[in-house]
Length: 213
Image 1: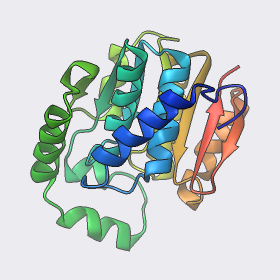
Image 2: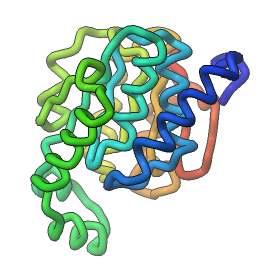
Image 3: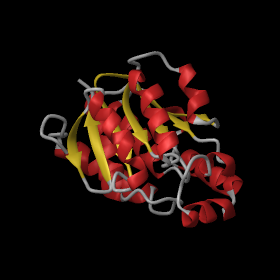
């Protein structure tokens, strides 16, 4: 993590890592413990009152962010995902990607996420909005979000629309974590972030952390 936002309290870092290692590996999804720790650290370091994850799936990112709120003793993460095939298939994606998303049981994944949230005792640190991101954005004031994790539909159409609509919702100095930044379909959305003044402060290849001026 960038020196300007790293947690210098090693006890907190160890605690967050232990919580994340115990919580997210059994869940559906692809976020690693290292990415989960980065998300939790951002939430903790900013003492965020409001963080958001767009595209929750099995909840690895959301639960990591909720643990950051627990460690900070304040705030909630809003988990935004309709858990439906139509949203996953919107826009232009690869045939292999579309085929995979057509076959999964969205309701089973949603219920597994809700159960994990309750099992971790994190219901008080999470609000679930079972909506598409373009419907949920109207519920947020401009500059009200400290940390946003964009991990929903990766098509150029949807990822760019999210930068357009959600960018103003992130407060000055806030963070935008973009997933699968090595996919061609997310390239234009990343360019749009830079055009809006966001700067890359960490590049992990498959994901990047941007900070708003």
